[in-house]
Amino acid sequence: MKRAALLLLAALGLALTVYPLYGTGYGVRAMLQLFMWVALAGSWNLISGLTGYVSFGHVAFFGVGAYTGAILIVRAGWPWPAAAVAGGLAGILLALAIGWPCLRLKGPYFAIAMLGLNEVLRALVSYFEGLTGGGSGLSLPTLDATFPIYYAMGGLAAAVTGVTYLVLTSRFGLRLMTIREDEVAAEAMGIDTFRHKLLAFVLSAVAPGIAGALAARDQGYIEPISVFPLATTITMIVMVLFGGKGTVWGPVLGAVALFVAQEAVWARYPYVHPLLFGAIIVAVVLLMPRGVLGLLQLRYRLPRAI
Amino acid sequence: MLGQVVVSGLLVGALYAMVALGLALIFGVMRIINIAHGPLLMLGAYVTYFLYQGFGLNPYLTVPVSMAALFLVGLALERTLVFRVVDAPELSSLLLTFGISIALVNAAQLAFTSDLRAVEYLTGAWVVGPIAFSKSRVVAFVVAAAITALVFLFLTYTRPGKAVRATSQSREVAMVCGVNVGRVYLLTFGLASALAAAGGSLIAVIVAIQPEMGQIWTFKSFLVIVLGGAGNYPGALVGGLLLGLVEQLASLLLTAQLSEVVAYVLLVLVLLLRPTGLLGGRQT
Image (cartoon, rainbow over all chains, first blue to last red):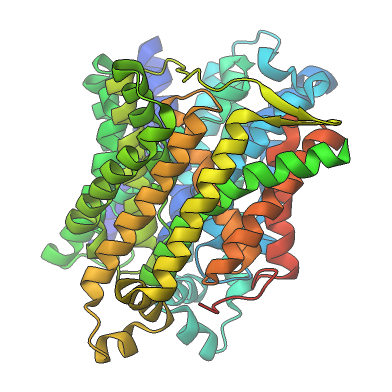
């Protein structure tokens, strides 16, 4: 069973590796987007799915990574791979700055702090116009790096999924889930809940930061509206909830399902689909809180770490 | 200059206090942070706009109408959705009300479009010495203060009001004393939605109306609760006035652009230094 699963994964990896050689331009771009969503959804799952602390502003890390990367490329002439690493570091720093005060407390403080974070960052980007270009945005020098960015984004998605697997099967992951189920009990068992929450949060901020810098390089132009949209956070949340929060493959499943639906159907009804996202969140929370994968886990006795 | 800041801050602070009181009531009684609180405020603003535009009604006379309308919306939301997550983990209630908030904002976008709308009524200001009192803000202050006072009278002296306070102190003891807790939840949610609606109607005369105007109010209301101390209803008053003052001061000393950043830094600082609020928490 395990060997078959590994073989399947290897085949999938190989297929995705050689895909750019045969795929169409649109296909490669679509896969790149999909990789990004897998990385973003997987990251949200690391903090919110595992610890139960809801991050309503995860796009902030994406945006900060995008601006860090773009500024380094434009103003300092960094090569994009280095800028991507810097984007990840920026995500870590922001996560520490927000997590330090807000995760020491139990309760909704963290969620609301994340809810307001987006507005604040957008205001800051507009304020520091000299550095960020303000509302008129920042244009990156032209460079066709679609293929390398395809592999970088694919590697990022794989890394997030792999890290989720490692965390979920480790004692660290078990402690995180204990915090989710009963934080007071976790403390009584001697778990340093603050440190665990903070570490999970920092871990969840790295990939969005890198993805932001990669996306900035890929699109060649960023502005506050394009890298701090609330819609991105909503999409991440919907993907994870739909697929199954607190699992390894739930975010992947949710990202694939929603991305395909978005490309195939909803692109034609641009105004209805955010409304639908709200309805999906409400429905999933009330009717299937464990998501699709959770239902399958219950019905077919799948392993916990799936 | 400083006098002007104090006046403007206190005027807007009363609005903050009234809207935040709604969020504080739901949090105190149901232990839920209602992310949809701001979007409910937005709906209240639209009620005023359409009554003013369609029937030429005085915007201030629409306050009771929008409060009644949103009271009913609140009852419906509580009865169909929110009551299901009262005892659920925090993640469920946060996500559920977040989903409701997204649905409300986007439904408003579909129904009313994203165009900015304005209720042009009572523009201008009364000038007393060096200080200008914006007319619409003064009236908003008076109405908000009156409504807040009524809510406190209701909480202090009436039987349902006492039931609300009892439930927020201890649900189990309230049940033992014969309080119908389910009905208290319903009443609280309706009342809180009506308070948000009153805020929306009063703001409609002051700033432009659009579907996304509400979300920042959820955040600000929460900030007010944190400043005052969660579960401490009079604390919401102090917190509201304080937030108004700080924001005005920030726009004077820095720029209006950064007033939200300053509010955010304030939240982070309070959480770091005094997480129980400036007045201490839970003395209902």
